[in-house]
Length: 193
Image (cartoon, rainbow, N blue to C red; front, side, top):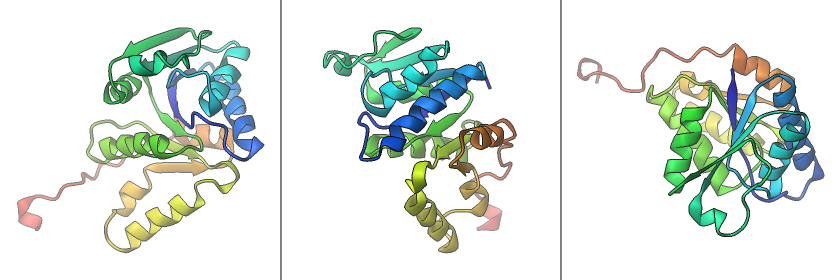
């Protein structure tokens, strides 16, 4: 993996460990010579993961919609800042640039980005590893919900297993490096309905 996209909050949240792990993730990516692609802001966990990578000598590419740049949240110390017109264009560009995705703690935007990448993978539009760094159990309830979806027949087990999870950065990166995308498609053919 040459580049990983990180989705995360533009705020710090209530627990200091979120910021600490964002910085540690950025630093670890730099140490492993993996470039960081992220949302381009200098605030919250977004700024922390970028700073972690930059301070360790890593390359960081930000992808920022023009309307957010005008709010003066663009990180000015990045290796490269790519400006786009919309949030959808941002996600598409971040996908195009990366070999895998990690979600740190976040809110609606982080979940929307994570689930769009999972949906694209489920539909066979890419075969990239998608992962959650489950900092201090932040995503435990979501993981339980995904298991419920599977048990209730609304999500195939093979698709649920596409989401890699760990609370340890090195373990998560190892899972991503060894990831093999499922060969089973989401859709069934008319003969099997």
